[in-house]
Image (cartoon, rainbow, N blue to C red; front, top):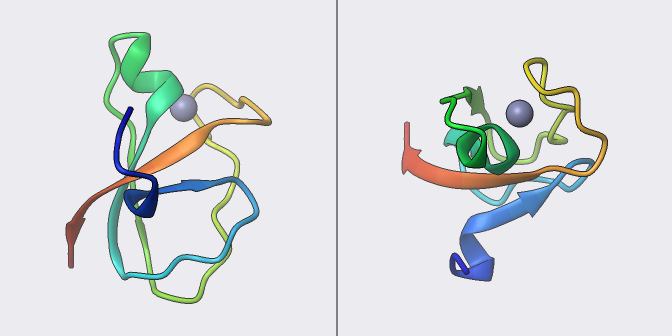
Amino acid sequence: MPNSSDTCKIGETTQKSGAYECLICKYAGNVTEIQVEKGKILPMCATCKDQDTTWHFKRAS
Ligand SMILES: [Zn+2]
């Protein structure tokens, strides 16, 4: 499992600005990344539209 400090669920507030990757898309073989600023609420993934996905923090912007 990824380090829990680097993952966020939908609806959680981000702790860091940067690129977040949808893990449900990742497991399906797709790459879906979004840019989110610190303090923003993580949205639903527009690609898989899963209501319960986890966003993995990939890199700081
Ligand atoms: Zn997704």
